[in-house]
Amino acid sequence: MKPSIFLKRVSLRNYKSIANCDVRLSPLTYLVGANGSGKSNFLDALHLVSDALSGSLDNAMNERGGLSEVRRRSSGHPTHFGIRLEFFLPSGEDCYYAFTVGALPSGGYEVQKEECCIGGVGHGPYFALERGRVTSSSEAAFPAVTADRLALVSASGLAAFRPAYDALTGMGFYNLNPKLIRELQKPQDGRLLKPAGENIASVVGHLARTNPPALRIIEDYLHAVVPMVHGVEREAVGPMESLSFKQDMAGAKNPWRFLAQNMSDGTLRALGILTALFQGNSDHSPSLIGIEEPETALHPGASAALREALTRAAERTQIIVTSHSPDLLDDTNISPDALLVVASEEGVTRIAPLGEGSRAAMRDHLCSAGELLRLNQLNPEPVVSAAPARQIDLFGETK
Image 1 (cartoon, rainbow, N blue to C red):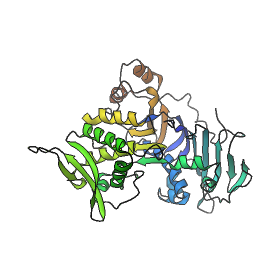
Image 2 (image 1 turned 90 degrees about the vertical axis):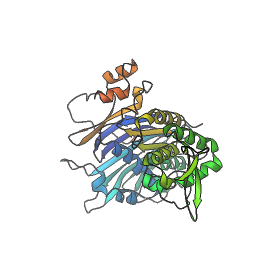
Image 3 (image 1 turned 120 degrees about the vertical axis):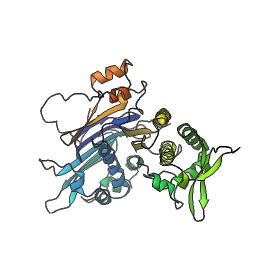
Image 4 (image 1 turned 135 degrees about the vertical axis):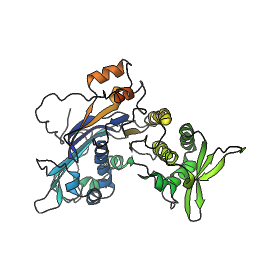
């Protein structure tokens, strides 16, 4: 079985509201903070990497409004943003991938620097580029690259770099939309769920054919969240498809069937979250799953079942969730290491591990993370000094 930790460290510079960020991740990581604090921007940075590699950097940037909307706005006018991801491949090898994207004086942008290293510099596949020019590589021949594209896309044609490319493009990010789940859907590839759930009927059908145990897990947790629902399956509706739910009805001996159009937002969103968590199989599943506020539209009483589902799914796939729900975090078994506190200070997002006071309260089982959040005592570790934050070195090997 592959390790559940894929991303071990994420470093960001000047990405949207995030000036500097350097954090380590757990198999299940909760990004906790108020609305507007910047939780979504952290996930979006990871999502941009996946989008830029599976499609193109130009499309990924345009979908976010262009470079001016992606790089941080401040009085210092940063002209670039940078991302560094340190991760494990399914083989267990260490890998890092980093790049910076900067503005051109004439308009537009370029990839200023880009590096990928598997197994350590001098020990495995490696490349480094500056402005579309290869400066160092372990490979005798390297494909042609340009400064407006990420070189790992071209390098994925080489067997040496394909595992890194597959792992980074295998990340899945979800903000489930009940409206799209409710509508009739065109039959699609059902191996992996799309970000808003727009192919969920195909995914449920695919699981029924290829991984019935996973579908039973989804149904069991859905029943725990919505006790009247006893099952779900794909149903053809002419050339389209939808979901059919089995639900208890007063006076009926057997459950009735209802199409997705007749189900509540909370039920549909819960199904989407559970499908995202337990989709795939041993040969084809996400390397990482990021979910925006999974508690949205769910009754607080469903929090325990949702939390258990997140914990169980994290045993095989790394999970990152954003949340500001005390109910979801109301469990003394949650480790302090699983929490990252997100706060906005004068419009700048700060992401940090828990401070020692909050850690001690959780370690000694004096308070759960949820209770600390209710008391507004879920505090990040303090800034060491008032001096400006040290610029993160995105390139080269780190300790």
